[in-house]
Length: 183
Image (tube, rainbow, N blue to C red):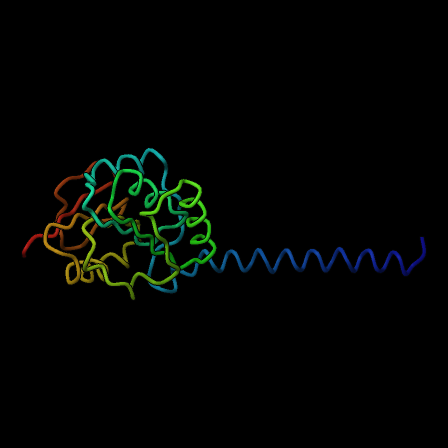
């Protein structure tokens, strides 16, 4: 083997490593993007927690559901399968939105939709059930947004984190159920 072949082989390996590092860095930045937008990081919800949250939400055929930071869409898909009239996933990571859309399509769900956008810029005034997993510094601001926008009687199912001022109507381990009252 001559020196030019060795050099080209090393050069190609280095280019491949560089490309893989750039793609890996891009993916990590995408996963951390919610933190910049005052949301929580992507953490997949365990299936047993998804099932418990859906049960606690008591979804009916008239419910309009939203998952704030829907990640891979598992809660939205479960809500759509549970019979929600409309199940909406709001996720800032476009790659996770595409994955969610594909999962809903493969499950033949016409009542599950996903959008790549910030939930801070989304109006939830027509939603009756909200699912969320957000970090503490987001919860106070989110509490105000949901109080201002949700209709009376809307249910909020929070995985792991608490609102500051609202008191849950029930707690089941790490999962809390809140209901918007007229107060």
